[in-house]
Amino acid sequence: MNTCADNPAIDAIDRALIVATQGGLPLVARPYHQIAERLHIDPDAVMARMQRMQDSGVIRRIGVVPNHYKIGYCANGMSVWDVPDEMVDELGLRVGQFEFVSHCYRRPRHLPHWHYNLFAMVHGKTRDEVQVKVAKIAEFLGQHTRSHDVLYSTRILKKTGLRLASS
Image (cartoon, rainbow, N blue to C red):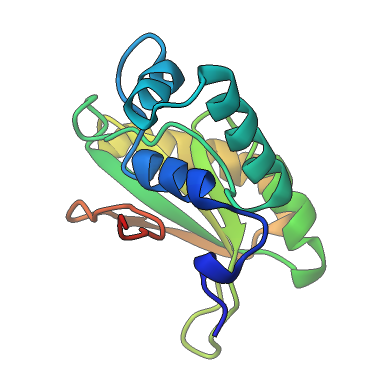
């Protein structure tokens, strides 16, 4: 069994950084400095190690994960699209560039019941606003889309990645 402890790409300090940041960065002007102070290491070392772990794939990404509901976006719809399989990657890259799409990805079809293969999350303050945005995607996709739908969120799910236990 391969565990983080077996991974030569990280050492005890890296592991401590992962544990210290996995719940989110501190909401202060200089979050890496606060983490460095807590772990008794140099802030430049914190930033260099975080960058190295991201570059090597130990950390996939560092980004903001807003709570859409708290900022007023309560009509959240996963738009689903049936597009030609040979074009799904190209179209998905373009749809993912719409400023109102938070994430876009390919998923396998489950025929005959589920024929959608492209998913794009759209946020809005109302369902009407989401529908206007989905219409823009439909216009872009044009003849390449055979059908689509919007699946609206009905509850908030906790979004977290892998969590390491503190040692």
